[in-house]
Every structure is written in structure tokens, then in C-alpha cells.
Length: 333
Image 1: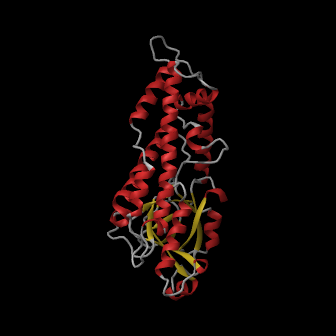
Image 2: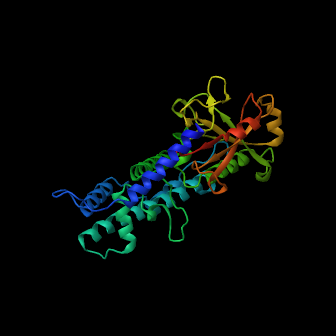
Image 3: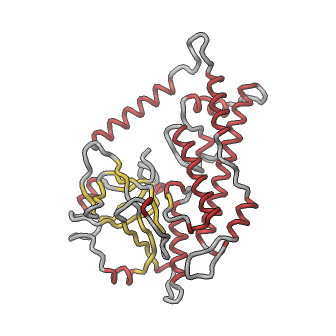
């Protein structure tokens, strides 16, 4: 599997180089030119753009949303409602950038506006089915959305994120039995908000946010089979394991199967607890203790893309999985 990963990476880099160096003009007579193809793509993508989120409207909706059970918090007093507001603001910013950029490219091709070097680069990206840099990074180079190698996958991600956040906004958390963690631009913020809410639910126990630690539990089934919203904590889904696989029957970490680089994880229950309560649970993580697995946003592993860490049950020594490079990722590309 390690060799297969290397070969795939090498092949992807070579194909990307070939696409970048190939001539952009249509060679055949009678065929559409590059500009015509790109304009058609822009018109098609614009017609499929999700609706805008109007801040005044969703701000008013969030003030009516309930907070976590057993607390008086509602509206902007509940941390996860604040998180939803911030996510809607970020997604609306992305929608606005993409819509404006697609219109400007179409206008520039028609000659209505000046074709700048930035727009020319965007035309080349769309022709090659790559994501224009303005959609993923701001002027300073800071990432503002999500990275994908192809335009189709990125645009599908945009519509899916809009559907998820709109469902949460319209129905409050009563319908959100599980959250697609890949769909958040700030997944760490979601987990922080969840910890804050659980801490407030234990106000009588005098829990302090600084003393609270995350506790995760890998379920035996996918998120579609979750029946109820938990009173404390949240369910998340959308993660994949690299370097190993999760045995749902035995509920533990096992060796990966040949030619399967990424294995979809079942739903995961995340909550907060204190070190004292965690010890009292008497969790069985295996004879040598748990494997502390990192969860990354992308397969490219670094501190910048680290979301959180979770403890996985294993019969083998955790060092075995460390040498295997086992981790969880929110995206496989």
C-alpha cells in the first residue's frame, strides 16, 4: 500500500505537469475555442450556484435557535450557535467570491471588462478543470475554503456544505443527529464549542473549561443509523483511516487490506469529560493502552491541518501503528 501511494502520487504529479504544459487553443477546425468552452462552463456553474445567505436573515434565525439540553442558553448564548453563525459568514463569503469571479470571467471573455492576468489564470484553471486560486486562498495566501484537485469535486463540496448549514439553520440541532466534520471551514471551532457546552451542562459539578478533556467513542455503525441526538456531546462523520482499518465487529484497529488506501470510518461520538471521570469509566483500550491517532483535514500531514486527536482501541502495541503511520483524514484528496 505504501508503494501504491507513492506510484499514485508520482502519476498525479506527472499528469498535472502534462495538463499545465499542453496547448490551450483548440487545434481542430470547427471545434469550440478555449474561451467558448470556459464561458459555457462559467454559465453552467453560475446556474448551479447555491443561494446566498443574507446575514440579517440568518442572524435573526440564530437568535431563535435552542441551546444544549438542560441549560438556559439559547440564540447567541450557546457556543455552537455562535459557531454556526461564523460558518455561515465564511460560506457566504466563498459563495460571493465564486459567483463574482464566474461573472467576471464571462464578461472578460465577451470583452465587457478588461482581461487581467488574474482572470487569465482563472480561465486557464477552469479550462483544465482545476480550482481557481481565488476560490481557495485570499490575497495574502491564507486558505479560506477547502483544497481539492479538481473543479467538479470542489463545486460539489460547496453545494453539500450549503445544504448542511442550511438544514442546521432551518431545523435547529433537533435534526442534526450527526455532523459532517469535513464540511466545516473551522472544525476545531466546532469541537471547542461542543466542549464549552458540555462544561456548562455540568455547572453543578463545577467543571472548568481548562480541566475538561475530549472523549471519543467510535460507534459500530454509520451516521445514517443514528436515531437520536445525544444530550451531551455530538456525533460526527466523514472521516477516513489511512495506514490501517477499523474493524467494526471487534471494535479495534487492524491491519489495512491490500490496495485499500483509505477506509471510511463509522460515526464517532465526541464529548467532553474530566480526567477523573475518564478514569472512572474504566475504558478498555487493549493490553498496551490506546493508539493516539491524529485527525487531519487533508492527507498532507502537518500541524496546520491537524483537527484533533482520538484514542483508538488496539490489541497490538501503539508503536506498531505509529510505524505504520496510521491517522485519520477528513478528505482523501
